[in-house]
Length: 527
Image 1 (spheres, rainbow, N blue to C red):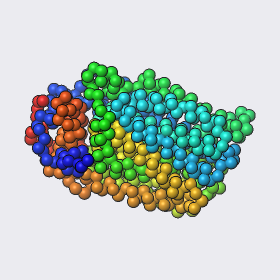
Image 2 (cartoon, helix red, strand yellow; image 1 turned 120 degrees about the vertical axis):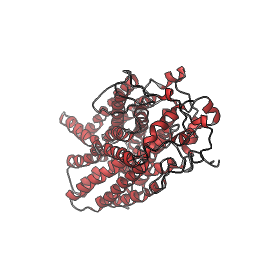
Image 3 (spheres, rainbow, N blue to C red; image 1 turned 90 degrees about the horizontal axis):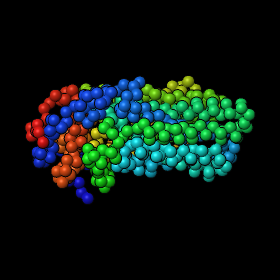
Image 4 (cartoon, rainbow, N blue to C red; image 1 turned 60 degrees about the horizontal axis):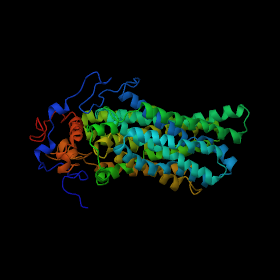
């Protein structure tokens, strides 16, 4: 089906200005900011929080934030729990280098499918159900790791545990429904960064659990198996907490709001269509494949890299490797903050430039890490590489919420799946055979990162512009987001929440044009 002028998938979307006036009008009384005591934080017209108080547990915004990142953190711990114990597990199960590489690919490949599904689940059922059900359903697979007895079983179980990484999609979707566009980069970056930190924390947690259990009297081959019961129980606990304490939207759970008629019930076909016909979706799938994707790949190989290349003890190699993932504590939030800061100065064009700079920087130092021949130099390059790659992840999801209001879940899912696909492809190419050493693989991976970041230069939002081009003439936010609804849907008012989002996203014009008036007849004072 050919794209028509003004469709969300084209860079000319919203340019014509010939759309019916009433279809894009926003009634001021309908979108007035609600600042009542109903919420612990000040909110905008969509009841999204305009402030981010990190150490608050205020309901619903900050409680949702903490439930979201902790559940994602738990899934990261379990998915990569085997990585720091590979030297023990490989002796117990007689694993070859190919087996270890295939398991690494499997651990991130499982969630390619589950992330795609999670996006649709968030759009249609809400992020609370998606997150709680997935984390509970994958708990048994974590326990199963304790009973693995062969290489095939090891690969299969790591594949199934990897499904849990789809909680990333519910995490990012949830934040985008709870927080205002001016701070969404920082909030998305912090939630996902702290969740990703589980990939570093598990490098510390699992060796410590292993040592404690071994000192308690277990043999080495039994100790690593018992250690997997800890992340398994964390899955169960977090699933219960998300289900009982979580809330889909600022005003309540999605199902209840749909029954009241407050939120329109959408059609999956429409939601999917506006995701897959928007060319920006595919560019960000590729970009995320070589920011988050390389982070996942590195989580799987970095401990073994230091252990073998510099002849370190297992605990020492794990500690160094942990710093790669633990950098998420500040790196990914920094990327989100940098994206928000650039947007305040230069609008969406600032966000795009920030993403390109951070991701290219990460690629350059990944290349240098592969070339490092001394331990201090390797550690230094690894830390800078981790900051660049993880900050780029935060900057990416400072942009994703603006691609589509209607199809946010599906696009988030596709982008997240791109991260896993990029990781699986990279590991398959460079880290699963003896053709390349781990160091050579890191070098080639750095080159791929820099090359695959270049397409960001062609991302163009007609109402805001691109890295090198200004906004299209007469393009406004209301046209862009309302074009995702046909005339019948607009008559039913299904686009009203998108109009509120369009109003709140005018900040993406930046300081230089942020005060420019919206073109006449695009947003009349009443509907």
